[in-house]
Amino acid sequence: MKQVEKEVRHKGNVIGKVQIPVYETIAEATKAMGEKDALAKINRQTAQDIMNDYRASATREVSELTILKRMAKSDPKVAEEIARLVKKFKS
Image (tube, rainbow, N blue to C red; front, side, top):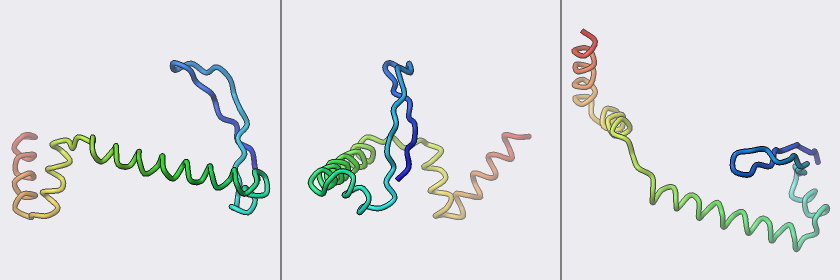
């Protein structure tokens, strides 16, 4: 296990620093925390990650540029038209 130092912020301002343990194996974490706490933390973080991923995919707005990039990748004619427009714009 190693320790990393992280800043604690409140309203954008650093209010302190804390030492965070970084475990190299699940066995090491289980030994340090106990199986019950280690499993509870794993399950809590897993749930949070799933909810964050869902929230991001449900609320993400795709920019026009991203849409054009996807269209250009899937259709050579679109890529050619974009290239033509860019060339015209540069002139």
